[in-house]
Length: 65
Image 1: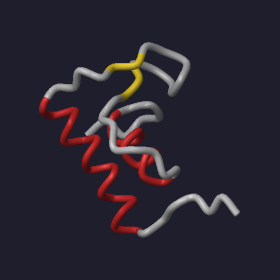
Image 2: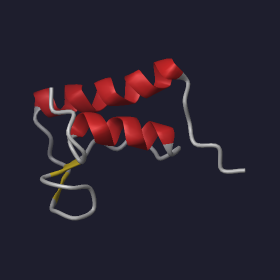
Image 3: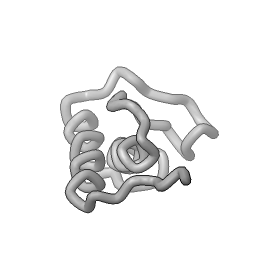
Image 4: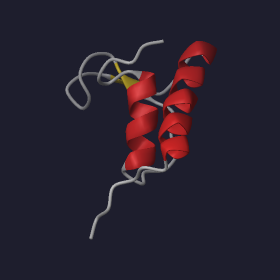
């Protein structure tokens, strides 16, 4: 599983944490500093979902107050 910063797992978890919509994607290198990929393979999609679900199970989300 690619858990690096900007990878599918990282982006899934970050999207959940920051209250962003479920939108499978990742970055080829660092987040917002490289090409964004939105056409994920089946494995990359599984990683994005796993990152989202990991944060969801923790129940951790950004408190914007």
